[in-house]
Length: 255
Image (cartoon, rainbow, N blue to C red; front, side, top):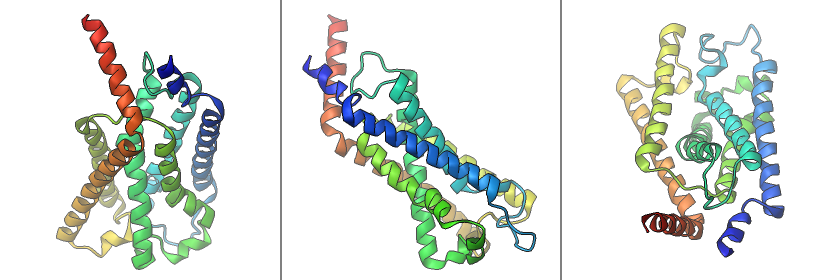
């Protein structure tokens, strides 16, 4: 009974209600940010569109990540109502499995990659990533939704919702496929659009671009491992509880 009450504490009461409210607010925020970007952010005819016309806004990793975050937090919200946030439920719903895997393999590492890379390049030379001319058409609040809030809410999420990370092989495979797909898409845009999506790639020669892409992938792997470490550090007690419950269940089946 004690174990059951402990599990319920992550799903019911004020704690669970506040987490559900957070999931709702964040899902709406990212969804509205994407809608506003596609509907109201237009470049005047006299302003050269960054990265050319081919691929539209979907050529930016920031937009891929915003869509990813909107989908992830919507799944979190659905899980709050039709799934479970218990540490060791008797039967793990599919939506909970999807939610947990998405954070580990995609949502956390990609969000931190976008946020950290963007603000680092902004500090070095903003013209390489977000030219000053964009200030006239891209509102500051949307910039923070796309590049700041993604990190803030992802850290809050990993601190407030329990999950067990997948095996490193499974998690890194998913992340690798995601990032390889985007890097491939960058080259498709370069081939058909005639320009690199990000100005920083224009100032790099071929060997430097290879190093840039390799460092980006290594950085993503590092962020995945950081998320795993951060999660295991915060939820040490609950992970032990889950292992105990899993081991106990296996022992009963054996008997």
